[in-house]
Amino acid sequence: MIERRKTKKIYVGDVPIGGNSPITIQSMTNTDTKDIDSTVLQIKKLEDAGCDIIRMAVNDFEDALALKEIKKSIKIPIISDIQFDYKLAIKAAENQSDAIRLNPGNIGDSWKIKEVTNACKFYGIPIRVGVNSGSIKKEFLHKFNGVNALSICLSAMEEIELLEKNNFYDIAVSLKASNVNLTIESYRKFADMSNYPLHLGVTEAGTPKNGIIKSSIGIGTLLSEGIGDTIRVSLTADPVEEVKTGKDILKALDLKEDGVDLISCPTCARTKLDLISIVNAAENRLYSMNKNLKVAIMGCPVNGPGEAKEADIGIAGGNGEGIIFRKGEIIKKVPEENLLEELLSEIEKLG
Ligand code: SF4
Image (cartoon, helix red, strand yellow):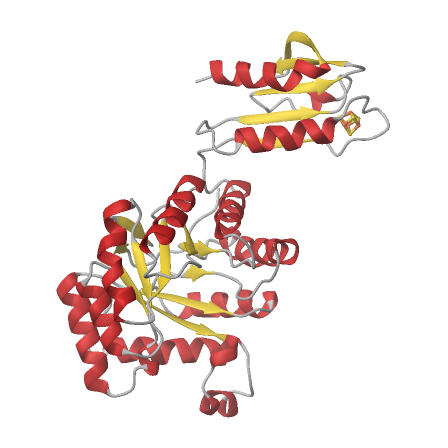
């Protein structure tokens, strides 16, 4: 059981972040925000995959106005991603955005920051500040010997202070780097400095092949230490893959219980059926099933049920046939071609 770091609780819409709330999964749309139909369609796919909070770029007033329309058709809260224009942040808040992602240091004059914090206070929405290793101010780089965990954390603290000066404390923080070790070190250091809730991610992690590895190590290491309140896996891919990976990371650490946990053996010379195809088909069919079950798919009956005793249900392959077992007890023998369908129908029977 992971003991989680105690953090301040904030709300994005009705979704809590921090304060020992369940760890949430975020993603970001890659549609044009003002293209309402395409954006809603993408968010619905992300909702179905298990996304809890969606972020979208707000690049102009038309994007900000679209938020209100998009919200009519989706269930999860929206975070508006703003780069430099304080007026867009205010417009997004006015148009029902549930949170704002921006760095006050990018906005400029202090009166502009005040206007943004006033709008967020008025609408009761939080702000996420975030430092990326590539965007640390020159003065910090000189003062703290380049890009390192200290310069990243102190940059984030400076952004936080700009909000706190306006009595704004509804804050989440991210400290991302594309280097996994630097990401881990930065979040660890910041966790000792502040109790604001943390949004975890390894930025620019890359294609699914590399990005899943980097994100799993980076986010997974921190979560296993109790650090992190919400996560976003960044992949150069369909954002649905980000959400699926996020769910898998949480499930692997027992931080998310809903959904099937599929375990399967690596296959060996004892495997006498096409186990890889069966496992891949099962993974697709079981992914969206909302049952808290451990399902095992093993290559042989000798080691199969024994090795997967802790599974609620599973199959073990034989030669042209296989057995279905429940909690290690054999319940039936089935020809290979029917194994998957029989397994799925037995799973349906389970609560
Ligand atoms: Fe080999 Fe059987 Fe173990 Fe699979 S379960 S790796 S087939 S011994």
